[in-house]
Image (cartoon, rainbow, N blue to C red; front, side, top):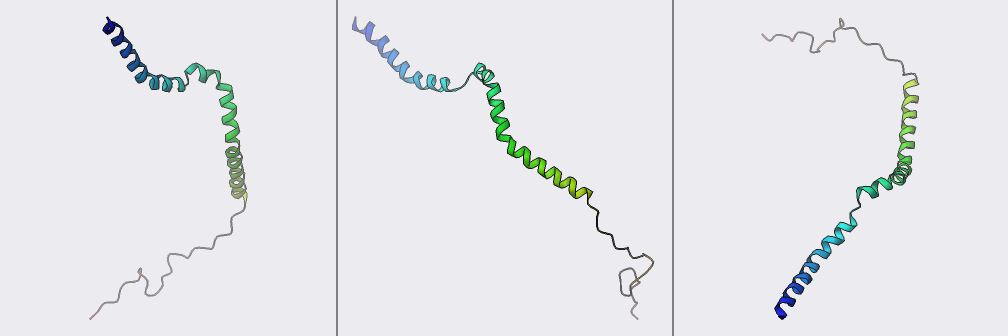
Length: 97
């Protein structure tokens, strides 16, 4: 008679000890409904955090645009290819006798 009462009670205690950490973990995971309800708040928070990054990127774009509109320094004229320098690779090598 005690066996009919003690075995199910012991099983319940063991299951409670095993499943309590699992239940606690599952309670910590937010459901999709919670995420959907917090959507506007999460969006606002993300916008605030990214504002500094947005400002620095805008500053870099302004700097790049300013650099693109500055006149470039004049280029030096290139040497003509018909002029050869003595001893250069384009001159024929002297033959040995």
